[in-house]
Structures are given as structure tokens and as C-alpha cells.
Length: 105
Figure 1 (cartoon, rainbow, N blue to C red):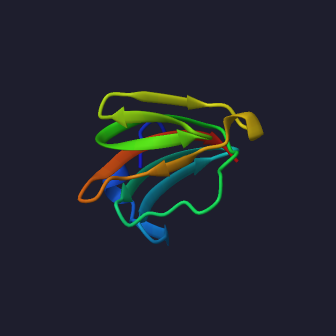
Figure 2 (cartoon, rainbow, N blue to C red):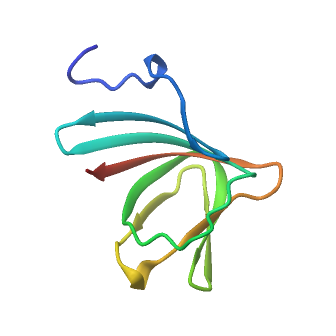
């Protein structure tokens, strides 16, 4: 592996929960995650983590405590951490979304 390239084709998919697959590259305290969410994904609790990312394919909606925002291929997302930005993602029946998230451990 080249130190300047993250080749996700050489990573195995992990399944951390129903409706989610991910590939993770970790270096130091930073990670890049390639994620796929499917229509059977169910986020039961509000997420208060911050997320910075880019939608590479598909579509999803995120509920920000009653404000629903749609994301599709080509959209970026910048979600601050904390209760003021609590959110839940959802995927429409028969749909999926693939995105890349840039995170600190």
C-alpha cells in the first residue's frame, strides 16, 4: 500500500449493525470511513457526534430534530457535534446511500 493512497478496493467490508457496511482507514488519530447505508438501517437514538463527509452515491435524509434535509450524490455534509445538532439518518425503501466520512478518533 502506498502511504499517500487509500485504496478501499483492498479493504474488506465490515458490518457494524443492520443496514450498514463500512471500510475504515485509520492513521494516527484520523480515520476515513467509506460507508453504505441500506433501507433496513434504523437509527433508534439521536446521534450527537459531528460528521464531515461527501455523498458518493445514492440518497438519504437526515432529521435534525424536526428539520428534514435531503442529501444525494455530490452533496457534502458538515454536522457539528453536540445536542444542538442531534440527528438521525434514514434511507427510503429500495434506496441506499454511500458516503465518505472524515473523522478524528
